[in-house]
Image (cartoon, rainbow over all chains, first blue to last red; front, side):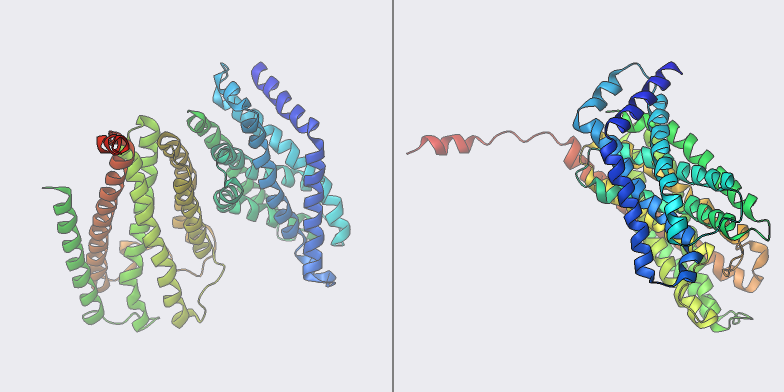
Length: 222
Length: 234
C-alpha cells in the first residue's frame, strides 16, 4: 500500500509538474466541443439532443493523448527500466498509473462539463452528483484498458496510430453506457432505465480493472 | 501423416461436406416459411459465424497458453486463430447484409448483434496491426497475447447480444429452433465449414512456424570467405 501511494504520488507529481501539458489537453478537449457545435451548425435542438455523445467523444479522443503521454514520459527518460527493477509488484505500478490517469481524465471531464452545458444549452434534470458518478465510471472504463495498452505501445514509434486502434473498440461498451446514462440524467429518466446503464458501466469497469491489473506484469516483462 | 497431408485431407473432406450440405440445402429442402428462398443462406451464415467465434476462442486459449508457458507454439497458434477468425468474421459481415437486404430492406443497421460483430472485427484487426509493428519476438508475444485476451471479451457479448438486447437479428440458433429437414443440411455444412476452418488454421500455422523458424531460430549465416579474397586481389 505504501509503495502504491508513493507511486501514485510520483505519477500525480509528474502530472502536476507538466501542468502546461494538462492545460493544453484541456484546451484541445474544449476545442473539440466547439468543433462539434460548429459542425452541427446553429441547430440548438440537435445540439442539445446529442450533447452527451459529443461530451463523451471529446473525453474519449483526449484520453488517448493523455494515456499515450503518461508512458511516453517514462520511456523517454528511461524511467520505466528503473521502475521495473524496483522490488514493486507490477499490479501496484499499474494501479498507481491507472488511478493517476483516471484523476487527470476526471479533471478534464469536470472542466468540460460546464462548458458543454453552456455551449449546448443543457438543463440538468437529474442530480449533479449522479452525473459526476457517470463521468467517474465512464472515465474509469476508458482508463483501465487504456493504461494497459499505453504501456504495451509505449515503445512503438507509431503509438499514436495503434493506441486508438486497439483502445476504441474496447471502450465502445462503456462509452455506449456512459452516453446513455448521461443522456438520461440530462433529459430526465422517465422509464427508470438509469440503474441498468450504470450497472453495465460498473460491470465493465470491474472486468477491465481486474483483468488489466492481472495482465500488466506480462506486458512489462522484458 | 505430415502436417501438409492433414491440411489437404481436412480441407478436402471439409469441401466435400460443405458441397453436400449446400447441395442438399439448396435442392432438397423446402424454402423457409417467412423468408422464402433467401432463408437458405442459413446453411452458409450460421456455420461461418460458428467457425469465426470458434477460431477467436482458440486464439484466446492459445493466448493464455502463451502467457503461461512462453512457448512459441502457443503464440503461433494464436496468430493463426486470429487470422482464420478474421477471414470468417469478415465473411459474416458480408453475408449478413446480403441476407438482410431482401428480407428486411436494409443492408446494415445499428443493431446490437451487428454492432458487436463489427467491434469484434475492429478489435482483432488492432491486434494484428500491433503484431506487425513489434519486432522483438518476446515482446510481441506478450503484448499480442494480452491484447487477444482483452479483445476476446467481445466474443461472448456478440454471442449473447441477441438475448441481452432487443435485436432484429434471429435468436440464438439451437437444435430445437430448426426443423428436422433443415437441420440435416445445416449440421453437414457446419461440419464441413469447421473442417475447412481447421485446415485453414493448420495451413496458416505452417506458414507462421516457417516464418518463426527462419526469423528467430535460424543461426546467423557465417561471413562469406570469397569477400575477403576479392578485397585482397588487385
